Length: 423
Image 1 (cartoon, rainbow, N blue to C red):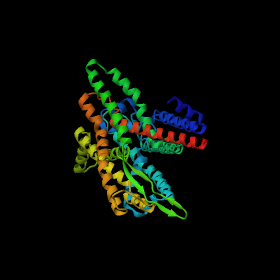
Image 2: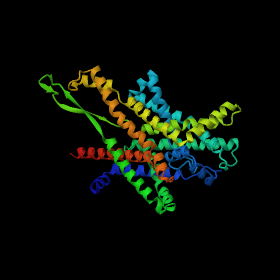
Image 3: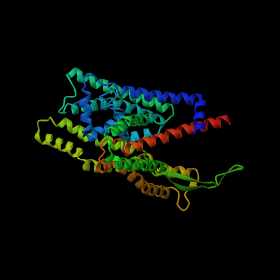
Image 4: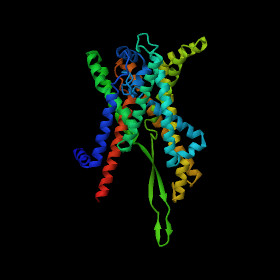
């Protein structure tokens, strides 16, 4: 371990990239503690502590929402825009063609950035409208111009984080957006430990030990599932070109059990937060039916059982959906056939594509169930232990461990590249 750290420190450009990423994360954490003027922070935090959905949003905003900071939305609007364009790419043929080319992907990324602006404005207005529903005053002197200014400031904070995340990604030290979410989750650990220590008593000792044990098992499970893969044997036929013979080798095609990573959970959170946020707009309508329906939606999503079931189903469904988006068995089968490769016992072409599709469908079942269980684990833990302060649940552990693994892999790949350059 020490030797690896020394290698990283000796590599000048790698050291600069890591220091840049750390500096960017420090800037993000500083911004998360700069509140928008005219907010009663104490009333705001009590409002968040009593709402499960807002507490979940606050985790992914790095605690910025509970402070009503200038980066209170985090990168949520950018993630929502990415989801929209990935869905559109499956429906609109032109976007699907663009997604297969480098230049086309850059255009889609540009469209995603542009779409982030109105989404951030809409979410900022939704949050302000939601907070105005609190029985205890949170926002003061919210006139039209103050409302417009607050929305612009919050949107600018989101755009800045999006730009900061892209700068981090360019340094090839992990994914920038994921690292920002990671930093927000980790930053909540000290306050969570402090809250547990203040409210701790001997009666809760067993519950705390059980929680720590489950956390360790969860981390081990995340590592195993993230690294687990099914190796499909592939044989390349011998080919003669001129005086040389190519092929005749055996290798394997790795299929990961969890192809989608943490994306399904992030997608599910974005979707599950949308209905209650829209319902907040409908509460003040003059039509009694619409107002009562909006209230019913809000009450339904605040119900722990309904929320847990909906969250479980969404994560499960999005795991299969995102796997279908990123894994193309027909394209893989065509590439194998073009290069003279085949799976023993399976005919090339359509049969290979169907075989790969059946395999990925079966192994994704294990990954989808694992992600879904991890997602609802905090709800189960709260009900079982009664420790409401334990907000660092399975979802947060999954994201933290996954981001750490991916970042370590990228750093190691750069070290290996430098070893090759030395040779």
